[in-house]
Amino acid sequence: MALKRIAERELKEERERRQYQAQQNYWPAKMTSWSRLESLLNTSRQSVFRLETRERYHNRADKKFFSLFRTGMPLPPLELRHSSWNERIRKSQTTGKTWQRVRIVSSLSSYMAYQFNWLYVYGADAGEDVRLLLERYPQKLFSLWEIHDFWMFDEETVVRQRHDHKGHAQDLEEVTDPREAEEYRTARDVALKCSRTIREVLKADRVVARSAKN
Image 1 (cartoon, rainbow, N blue to C red):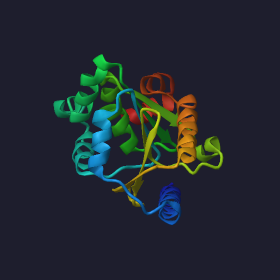
Image 2 (image 1 turned 120 degrees about the vertical axis):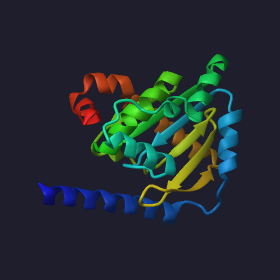
Image 3 (image 1 turned 135 degrees about the vertical axis):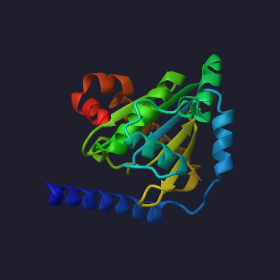
Image 4 (image 1 turned 90 degrees about the vertical axis):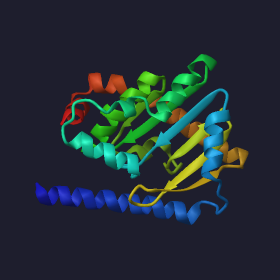
């Protein structure tokens, strides 16, 4: 069993390296800034959509709270429930602005359990439509469009987000070609159609629910 887990981890790391390399090779060099992303989050009027495709993301906050989660703490700290992200969503509810997030899940892990229980559930409570796309081989759902992380604002503005093979955020690129933006709208539609809300999944899928408790 130990050898099997090692082999699975190596395959996962190799898949992430290839995804990162593909981004490096084929994406244009023109990048946008993180302040531009923040501005779009604040100024978009109708909708914000986020596709998350990675097995894991690495940032300082995650490191802190994931460590707490692994100690067996039954509930997340109040600062997570009332994070700046969740408060942003709550404040926008009166305007009719929609927030949607689809997370592609090809395999389960303790990190996924942390995200399900401590991040996504409370994001949903704040008003975000958080969804999980459970598919071992998700690429087949998107045909020739290579799956990767992106944001979409008001159905028009698309920002791709790049990470290194370990999951650290690297660069952002704003899509300027209308034809390419249409491909992202199609990818968004596929992701929404093939996914279920976080609460539906945790309630109905015993495998996911059991993983999220361990």
